[in-house]
Length: 125
Image (cartoon, rainbow, N blue to C red):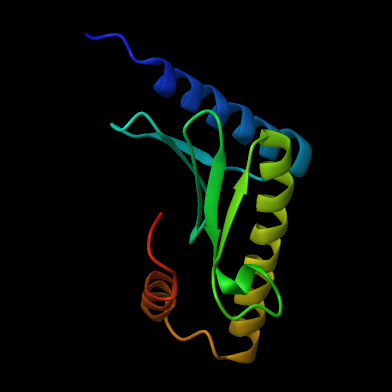
């Protein structure tokens, strides 16, 4: 088996550090997925997935994650601590939005929510 390159190792280390910070400091569970490109994905919430190359961490925050915003926002940070804090805030806003929509009866079906989420983002990063 070929040895992984430095980018892949750094990306995995950063992703694992971020998920540990999310879990221990913010009580948020997240999953790490290693990509063939050497990058790592950190899945935090439906529609909230961060990516890292080991040097930077970035994600597209859905508009619902930022009250008052009507378009998704590309977020970039260079520390796991900064990413954990911002991802936690975005996750909380997304949770509150979906709970409010379910209570108001405007959420539709899960399929509707999924379709809305998949079509509301800017171009993938």
